Image (tube, rainbow, N blue to C red; front, side, top):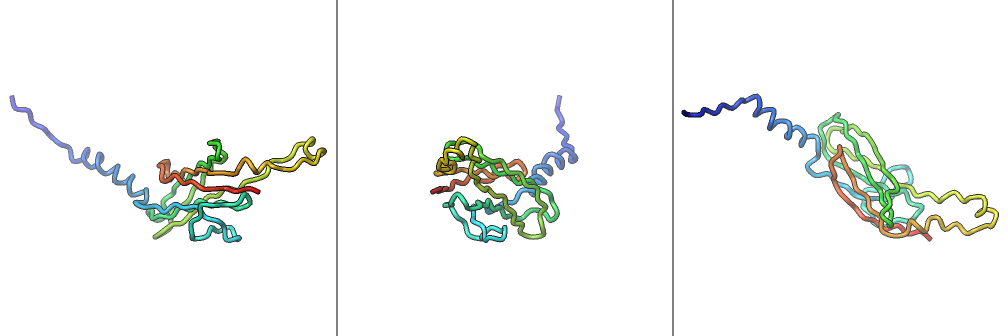
Length: 154
């Protein structure tokens, strides 16, 4: 008995088109870097790896996606002790050509309790932020890049 194989063009198209379509929504090369701000709420174009506690730390992602496609940028910010301090989620719509978008981290002093205020204790709440931080970027649920940076608080 001779077995005959039959292939369905429809299943071939479905099987191989879906992964290709998913790849088209993710940029082949997304540039991801950390930066300081210009003072107007827009990050500088050059990358930075060292920040002061008072700096707004920008995570910048730029890439080429299909025009008018919707995406989700996420950043997980971990402090020097490995504790997740922030999870940023930002939905964006890609423009024609290159799209540049960003998220940011801004460190805040802890609110002193009543006893600390009465005793006029020195506020050292930012010292725990000293050291090497990690941030992991995801676009549409896909891990894109992990970066490390240094924070110095005086």
